[in-house]
Image (cartoon, rainbow, N blue to C red):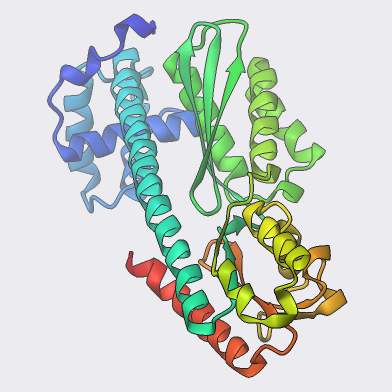
Length: 354
């Protein structure tokens, strides 16, 4: 099958029943390498058809040139044209899934950014202290889906979807052009063996086993697995939103020009605030989700005259972030802790509604 032949098989009109049977034949043959009979189709699908009806449909598919019978009384196997129909429809479905996911994520990321900025602003107004909130990070990532597709004769694109529906793309060089049927087999192999695994589960033994199954394409599989592991462990730049820095001037103990200038600089250059986020997430109290840093307990030098109260919020799929309130040591701890507890619970509900 040449790539230039793509689309020839898809001109055929297939009803849903024939399409389901054809897909079942291709899937079973890809997995077993054995001709597929009507009983296997009956067990593999939800069509609730008799074996006789399935045999009639298979006869129609054979007449259309989509399947062949290699031996008398044997089951059927896909023809080149049958592979073509299956591959084209599979690629269209997966391409559409990825595109839909990208559009959804872009829309959701924009809504989430606006939501987090509003949370920081609301907390600053309600408490009269400075506030910060970090965008959620993915923790303990797991693979959800891998798709390789052709870029050109010498390159493949590996699209890797990880926990939290985060999408990573990686260009993989290849020494020779792969046809669509081979790429489909590799996609099925990787998703069957790697789906749902965390990075610590992708060990040398597993990699060796998957590469062995890939045969002559083991190097490609190795490169894709490396890209997947890299995507799982990669740390994106931490995004932190702040509000209420002018509230520092409401407290005499923080209005010394040097102290105030240092505090404001810390909030303007949010890189320093990342240490609070990391410390909070790493020492998260599973019972309360609240951390209180008083004076020298804070990991940031410019906040040694302040108290910092943080909470961990979670948006599902292992996505966690930190929301914090920074004020003088004489802050109203009861109000701040109650406010953060309420906010961390409300944040998940707000996000789900957006």
